[in-house]
Image (cartoon, rainbow, N blue to C red; front, side, top):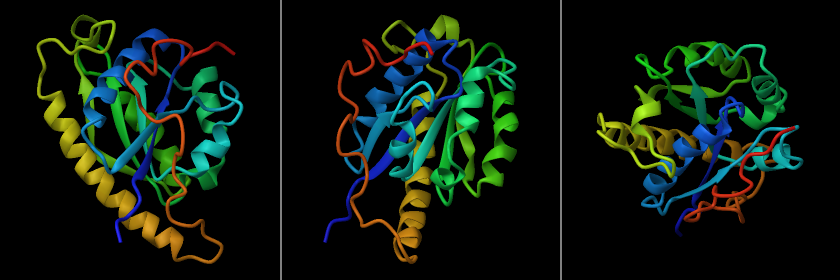
Length: 201
C-alpha cells in the first residue's frame, strides 16, 4: 500500500517583508513541484489567517522562512509563537533564510529554543540566500546560484525522513488522526502566491 503524501507547511517568520518572502516561496514552489511525495501549502499564522491553527494541526513538517532582521518582539513572530504547541509536537522543522552577507542564518538561533520547547525537531540543515536582494527576482527566479538548489534537495531528504518516521509514531499513539490527513486543498500550484497570499492584519 502506497503511503499518503507528506503535508508540508511553509511559514513566514515575518510578513513585514511580504513581497520579498513571496519571492522565496515562489523559488521553493518550483523546487517542491518535483517531489510527488510532498503536498506543500503556504500558511500565514493566526491572526493573519483565520483557519491557520486547523491547517497547522494537519501538517507533517514545516519550512520556516526567516529574514535577516531582529525578529524578536515583532507582531509577525508573535503570531507564529501564538500557534498551539501541539501543532509543532513531534514534527521536523527546516529553515529558508535570506539576507545580506550572512544570509539570515542568525535568525534561526532565535527560533530554535522556542521550537525545542514545543518538542519540535529543528534540523541542522538550512538553505540561506546570501545577498538575496540582488539574486532573487520578482517571481522567485534565482540568479547566480550558490548551490541553494542542491542544499534544498539535501534538506528535503532529511525533512522527509523525519516527517515519515514521526508521522508513523503519531499515528500509532492513542487518539491519533488517520493516515492521509494532510493538506487536501490549496497545494502549491504555479502562480499560487501571485495575488492575496500575504495580507496585512
